[in-house]
Length: 437
Image 1 (spheres, one colour):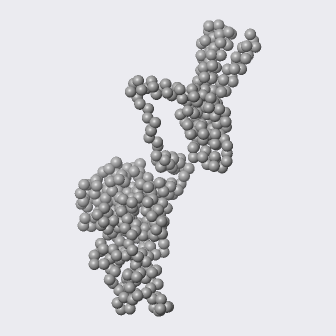
Image 2 (cartoon, rainbow, N blue to C red):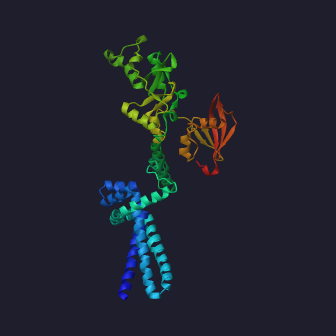
Image 3 (cartoon, rainbow, N blue to C red):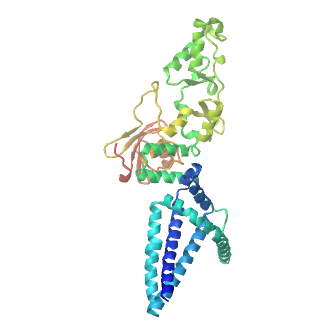
């Protein structure tokens, strides 16, 4: 009898160890990083391959682990009850309930799950080789149980769909970036760059383009020398040329092409292009065909198009073909890495100025996306591209100077207006959103 009792006690202890293994494995495989396991598998780690096989069928894996966990817990409780009944009689049932509850909760549930939460990768890699065969053995039973559950739910009108919506990968990445940034594990500049990459497929060129009002365009019928002087006076290397009407863009002139043509008669007269009036080179032989793109083109599509065509400059048109503005490769890159300035860029006063009291004086052309990214605000980006457009959206008309509007705790005050354009807005964010300069 003593040998049987000792064997039963050892059996209970072994079953508790198995229960702890199942509990820890369930937690580890639930929270383990699939991306990290994928990288480890690519590096040739066989244990990571086993983990990925289990993660490939999560419902079957979780079902098998839960089934195994319940089996060992029930068996351990039954053995403990039989041992304590043999020792204490009927009172052994109460003793078994109290003792097994404490042992299971502390050593078979809380302890292994706490360890697995703190070391999910290590736990998953260590347990995969043990749990894998268990999942293979119990898998058919789990499949049968799932069919019974689906049939039972169908009796109450609950239909299980196989095409459940899968979480968007970009949203998952955004959430991970936000969590790492809040925990201090990632600096803001790195987060902004990664957010910018994820935004390329969501943002359209109309949101980042240089509006036609701010474009520098030259008359194609001007003498080449005058165009050269105007081009050199601008901070840009490419400029659109129009003829008869500013909406009639006939070509894109590159400063290098024009300067090469102007210098050709002096350095090598025989290589000069066909001349125009007054001996100046004909611009029609120098400019390049304009490239027009729809305003609804996403940044990732435009970036791929720039790479495919080996061009850096495109004109943006609306659905009616009217010129809206221009977009360059640099504009798209700035959405990722921030402002890119060189020695030829014109230095301007800051478009966002912090004021005493926590308010901000902001030029109307500043985009809502830039403000959200710079100050961690959550202003709506779907209603308007610029802060001036957002104010007009709130007012449902062109507001007058001095008018104020409220949105989600933010106060927008129109400070300057030039004809029909809101040129400056003062924003007072909620106290929780004020960022000191």
